[in-house]
Image (cartoon, rainbow, N blue to C red; front, side):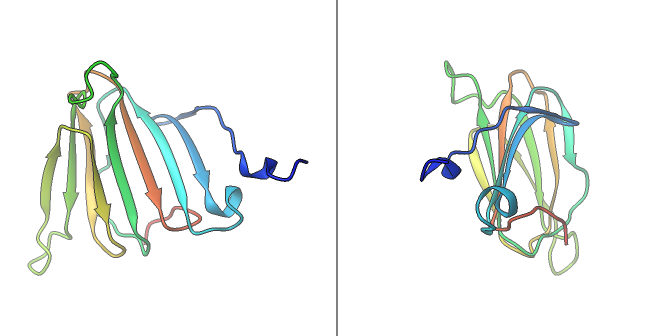
Length: 136
């Protein structure tokens, strides 16, 4: 093996129940580092997450249009909820229609996460500061 060969990680899109994805996990791909990232192509309406939940790690969620001729049009709507839905932490729901990022600090309730009115593919990118994804 060449000196830097282990630093080049190549994957193909794999079928996934909610789209096609490529997932890189710190525990397997980055020498055990606390980092993971998934790229998921969303091309139809779907519920990614139906209920609020938390993680004990920070998470970053991006939504990008996949139409290079019109990067201002996300190609659908993303409904994203933040908050536990309690008196102390009321639930807030946002509708995302442009490229952007949601930062979810550790311990923050988030969900639902719904893709609707999809007219063009959306690239959903999910990055975590943990080697493996799980819900708290």
